[in-house]
Length: 268
Image 1 (cartoon, helix red, strand yellow):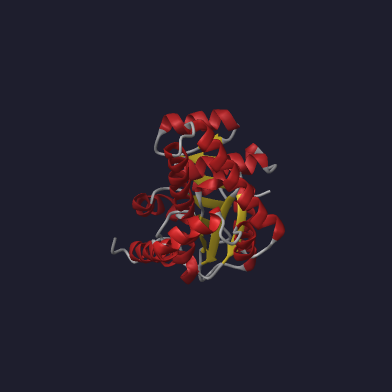
Image 2 (cartoon, helix red, strand yellow; image 1 turned 90 degrees about the horizontal axis):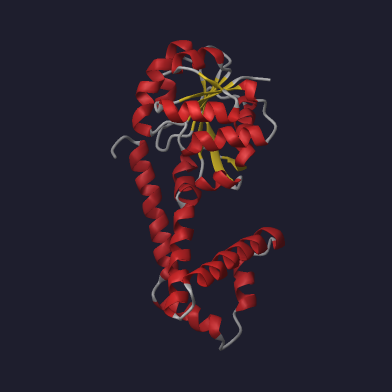
């Protein structure tokens, strides 16, 4: 079994550690590092994984998973560069950091994979897009895919599509939570207790998502099944159409993709 070092123990780093352990990975095969010593020590004790300094972790690992903030990536790469050897795989979960940037700060020929995860990984329902660098083999990409599969689903894409992935699934949970907030508030306005309104909305969301996944039907078909002519649903949907909600969502997601591209180009 290969040794995996996870650099950074924020939300995604911690999520990946717990996901790997739940999927059957041995604690002895995992190493963690982090800037906040108390949090790293706590995670190390809780999960029984090794805690090392960045350089030592890079020397000991076959796979390096970089989960630090984008602004901290340059300094981390400087620390680990001289400890990365041929055959290592470097996987980055940092938003806006391109494979070109990673490769330029690592030894020539290093296999690099760029990942765009999302927060539902916290409950093993993540959706990650992964893209290979120029030296990445199919075996290295499969390794990254297996790693991310421990806390959700994974799709392979060319790197040029990762701005769209960022806009759709990376930022996507926030759009859903935004709609959920509005629906809960509407229930309160209509006289429901907030706890009841919340339960109604969350279960409805869960049920609708499950229908999409289980039935494989197009969302238009499922929407039409709820929309009786002249009924309550049609009255609501007409208001959404009158306020151009569909167009607003498309425009918002396009804006997110544009911002992702801007950040990746270093002009953020």
